[in-house]
Length: 163
Image (cartoon, rainbow, N blue to C red; front, side, top):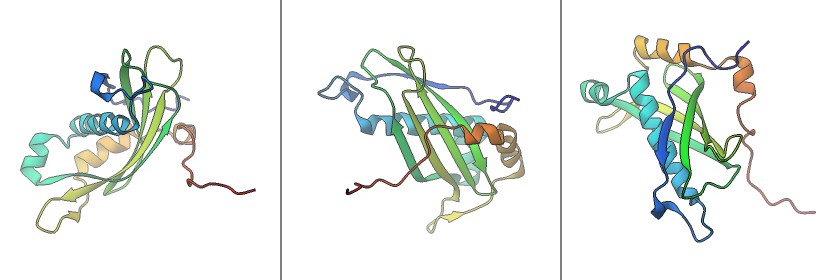
C-alpha cells in the first residue's frame, strides 16, 4: 500500500536567494522557516483557503507550532522543492509535514512539522471549524497510517544531557 494519499499536493519550488546564505556557504536556518511559510501558503491555496476564501470568510490559518530538522546542507546553487503532506487534520487543525529536497542530495535535506489552526479574524480571533468542503479535501489528502508513522525524524525535546 502506498503511504502517500492518492491525492497529493503539488510541491512548492524556490530558488535560493543569495542573501539567504550564511558565512559557511549554507542556507541560514531562519530561511528554512521562510520557505516553509511560503510552502504553507501554497498548500492553503490548494486546499481552498486561498485569497478569495480569506476575503470572503475572514478565516485563515495561524501557525501554532513548528519543528524543523536540518539533515543536509543547502547551498546557494540549490533549487528547493518542498513536498507537503497532511499528516492529520481535525475540524479546526492541520498537522502538516514538509520535506525539503534538492537534486544534489538523494533524500530530504530537511523536514518540518507544523500545527496550523483555522481562525476567524476579528478583534478577538477565534478558532473555528473548517467548512465541509475543506474538511473533505483534507481528509482525502491525509497520509495513511504507515505514511504518518514513517514521516521524518520524531520530534523531541531539546536538552543537554549530563553524564
